[in-house]
Amino acid sequence: MAKRLSNQSSISEVLQQFIQQNKLELGMDKIYVEQAWKSLMGNGVNSYTQEVILKGSTLYVKLTSAVLREELSYGKQKIISMLNEELRKEVVKEIVLR
Image (cartoon, rainbow, N blue to C red):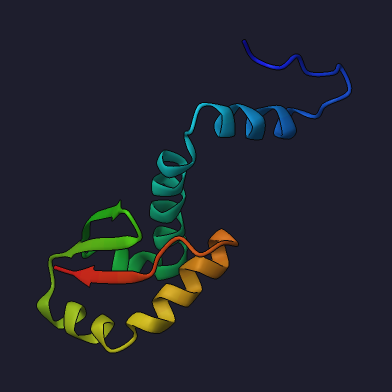
């Protein structure tokens, strides 16, 4: 049975406890990574992005432009650090551009 919460908890605390108790962190990370990709990369890259999928600690990004894929491949480490900084924890360790 779940632990009873005091009436003095904020909504964010209650939601965080709910996410932890029901082991929903991985699913939330997938959503947050996709949102972070869209906000960090901007409209130019997003118009060529088909899919952003997080599997484990690897981020798979499906792009429609081979030229853009090649350009982004040179800055993979910078993209990883920007995403992790945006998420405030180390979620992404590797990026695979398709």
